[in-house]
Image (cartoon, rainbow, N blue to C red; front, top):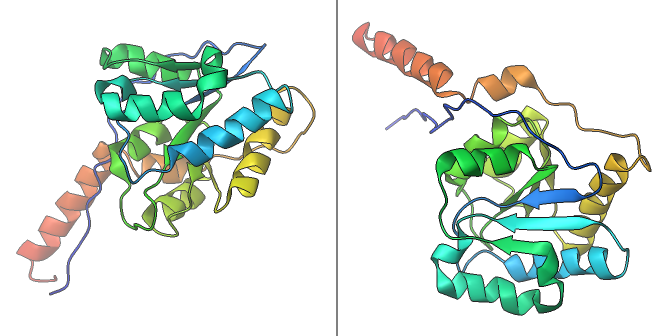
Length: 210
C-alpha cells in the first residue's frame, strides 16, 4: 500500500563554535559498527598528516563506548594517535560544542548497505558545516547531503583524499571554492517542519484525500 515517510529530523539549539585557526578539526559523533569502513578513512587521514603535513585533528566522541571499535581505530591509526581523540560517552552539550568547534563533520556509511542514515545525519545538518561522507551510499544520505548543499560524497579513497585536502586548503587560503548551504532545505529537516508534514498528512487522511 502507498506510504509516506516522516524523518527523524533535528531539534537542537546549536552552540556558538570556537574554530581553531591553526588546525583542521574533523569529528565523527557516536558509535561505530563493524560494517563501517573506518580503516579506509584513517588511511586517508594518515596520508594527509604524514605525507602532506596537514594539521588535521580527528575526534571520535562516544566511540570508546565499544572497546572493539575503539581498538579498530587505535590499530589503524597507531602512528598518528597524537592527532586523534576517542572518548566514552560524554554529555550532550559537550558533544554539540565539539561539533560546533569542528571544521567538518564525518559521516561513515555502511559498506554495501543503503537506506541507513542514522540520527547523526540530521543532527549534523543543523550545524551547516561541510559533511564528508564515505563511502557514498548512493541513497538517502547522498540525496540529503546534495539537497542541503552540505555534503561531499566520496566513492573511493582517492576521492576522499581529494575531498578532505580541498577542505583543508580552503581553510588555509589555498582554495577559494566553498560549499553553499541550502538553508531552506536544511530547515525542512527540523522536527518542527516534519511535524507540520505529519499534520498536513493527517488532515488529508481525515478528509479522505489519501
